[in-house]
Image 1 (cartoon, rainbow, N blue to C red):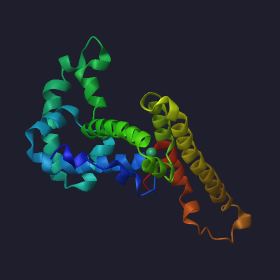
Image 2: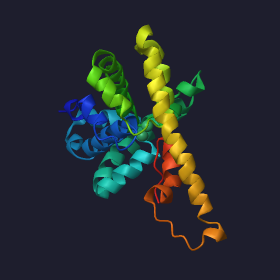
Image 3: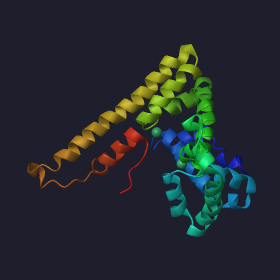
Length: 230
Ligand SMILES: [Zn+2]
Ligand SMILES: [Zn+2]
């Protein structure tokens, strides 16, 4: 059950073509992990041991609070706070020869959801490269994406250096770069139109296009992989 919730066919991730497919994958995994942690996993002691140790980052505590009632978050916190009290925020938990490896430092940087999602993403990206090399149809589907956001374009191009064969690497990098640059070009133009719409000379022209209206949020999302909440 635990691993199967993170099984998603790669083609399904690339099929919608509505946003960066890697962001799309991240959101699906993140959503499933938070759902699981605050639901079925509440009854699984081995998962609780892991969440007691890792805790969560601010974004994922916030997601858990939005998704579920406060009691399920409180039950997770009850044993996590116990762990922090007895093993982390203590004299020995704070001292270590290598400061960055002290239990307290490690606890501040870890998050059960981030760690789980990153590890699943890692193996799914490796499989994406394999699929892209092996299957013509998937290569076509990849080239038809709406765009690849900047952080994921950088990550894909970096990883491709060691995960895609020499004869194909150029095609993969060129396709990824054009997916990002073409979208960037349309974003630039939409942001310019957004700025111009505030000019008094255009005061009588209503801002009708949704692309122009949300161009600021879309730019932030392209640059950071995160969509700002309104
Ligand atoms: Zn992305
Ligand atoms: Zn997190």
